[in-house]
Length: 403
Ligand code: NAP
Ligand code: MG
Image (cartoon, rainbow, N blue to C red):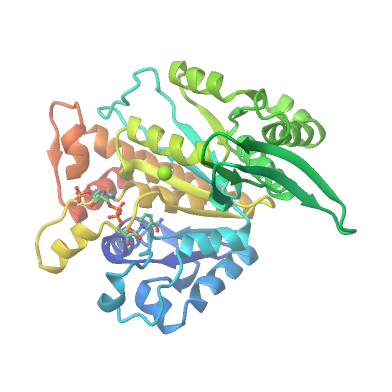
């Protein structure tokens, strides 16, 4: 069988620890036999980030802008313990943070649903994708503890030195606390476009919610920007695609999400997304089954797994012990990137391969063959726990039947 050709390269960002081991196996077992892999390779493993003084991370982000599609392996974000372990000269920043900043991107997280792993909310038969606005609000705040007897005001000074003041509180009777938040119209607009584009991409409704009834200027601005951009740039495309943009109050959104069957994108303000993404991913069963894609407002895509480098399994692997690490989210990162490459290049055979790879992966688990994390929670009766590599080989058996 002739291998599938990739017209344009995609950016490949290698990573660390157990996921780096899985990365190579996924390529060897599930990709290279079928696809003439055309990637521009960047090694974001911590050792090479140290060797290049993190230049490699910046280079990989630039390459992503050039080619439009990237796939990333999980990477270590160094902490104090990593300094001696990797002989680091600096505690290098999180590569994900660096890449997100370079692309001005929004992260979308989607669970992969399989029979036997049931969400805690039984009506959630379709995935809920959460998008988190990753700028501002409480994550870039200013805070002051205020003593009794003080008065706190918001002050805005314009370029000519004129001040606008608004009383926050007169602390006449008690000590207290204050907090200053901000956001930027540009950042909110970029977030809105990324979400509305991704909705068109997936042909799914987009939900957005804030507390605009209480926060009549701050949250209301989010609501207005989303609505303006939707009306001016997306309304017709959404109507043609048969999908909708839906705004409601955050309390109402939470209640509707619980009652829903899934199958939509939930755009969240920064704090809501932080909290709700952890709740939703836990409710779907396993972090190892959660994919993640970073989308820029101008349509650049970087695919990855939501989980980390699975350090504990890596140390077992180094000792020669058997591991049973789940590679599903990393496989879906590859399939997502290959499908997007195929769409952009007009090579449907690449998209078909991505579909088959995902189907074969899901089928393997639904046939009862799975890694230890899923084995613990699967409700299937005839289930079998396999090691990391056997799992990939079992997927290949199913994939070969489809090719
Ligand atoms: P983690 O790698 O996600 O692992 C936490 C635990 O979750 C594991 O010990 C394992 O539980 C379970 N788990 C996660 N993924 C799994 C998989 N694919 N298969 C089976 N079990 C899985 O998070 P962490 O231990 O907090 O972080 C480790 C390193 O990853 C850190 O250096 C962190 O900076 C980095 N990290 C990177 C990214 C990224 O690049 N996007 C994201 C998060 C963390 P058991 O041990 O109980 O089996
Ligand atoms: Mg969180």
